[in-house]
Image (cartoon, rainbow, N blue to C red; front, side, top):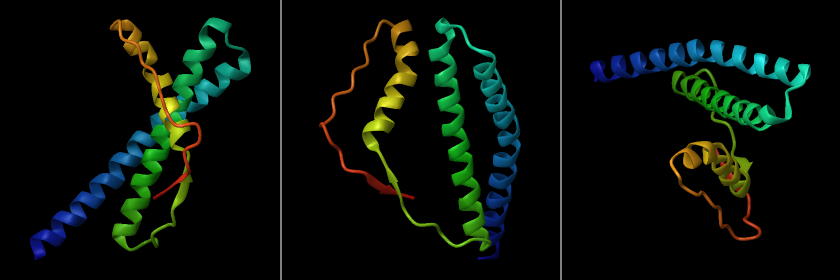
Length: 123
């Protein structure tokens, strides 16, 4: 039992360290993207900059969730409630982000979803 507790504590410490260390360059990247947008991005680069910004925000959200998980497992924070998630918007964002890689491979990505999906409560 002691080994399991130590392993769990080591995992929690590792996740905490990794998420903090990865957050720093991510915040810097997001700041640089915002500065690019404020300086005026040429029309040909607006879409790629928007994709990078969206990907950076998604990563930031994942790191925030990871840190919240660490806090909950450490007993430092209570679990949070569910948040409404727009699945259609999420799927459209993923398709948009993956379009360049798909086009490079000669693939076509297309999203076919019902007209009105309900929001999903996600943690």
